[in-house]
Length: 363
Image 1 (cartoon, helix red, strand yellow):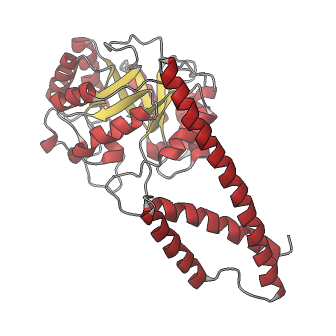
Image 2 (image 1 turned 120 degrees about the vertical axis):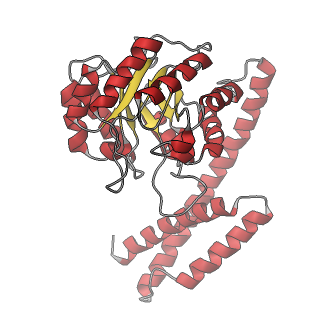
Image 3 (image 1 turned 135 degrees about the vertical axis):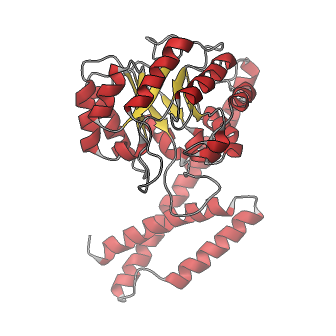
């Protein structure tokens, strides 16, 4: 993908040049007064690149507040004229995109529900073809990296080079402390596959509650994201959508001030040497681990042949439960997170099952 890493056509208002993008504003545009008050307070923080607001709100179930539509775009225009802040809003259809451009919105983002639908993304891409608008694409609701990349590619092929991805977490069946499971590994894989593509984080939608937003934001920065999109409301308690995860402007400013920007690599030679030593040890351990894993899979194949010759089921549930319990207990005793051990052993077991199934079926 051909992208402009720094979004250089947009003036950077940030004091620290290492912050390429900070987007903040209410989940929903509820009134002109709410928009202006929030925008004025955010401008005073001097820690904002774009003022965001939800104009159309796709909701899970009907009957909830679904946004003010075109009327809210008028308020965004007033915000831009009075404060000088660049503006941003979500678009879910070609009509949304066309209206947003009509009212001078500087940045559009494609939401998680929309990015999961290639038809909708293509319609939006066709509607903004030939423009210089900046576009962000949120990850799909479900953890599908190829679908996310596909949405980005559709926008990029429309000639949009001011392009970035938004990591906002994924829906998960299992309950957790977060509204959306971060699944950082998927965002990391996206960065590896598309190294020139900026990836920013939406800690508000990952956290789900304002108390966790700073923690998620710091984690994102530690993984070298290119910015943050944070929901900020002048009075979150009465917000018409996502009230629990929105910050007050002063709390947002404090969070940004408190966040730590890490160095990409050690500056001092002696520190680089020490880091290289640790990395060398990791490399050796990884090599050993891969060798041992290959040996383990060879034994799994032998077991597969034995099961085939003796007409035994591939999956032995009691044996698997014993392995899982024993390895989790052993890992915990050695200071490892039991959940990590469980995930690791599950992946290994799945690969063993795949190999034995292939043998049973004569492949």
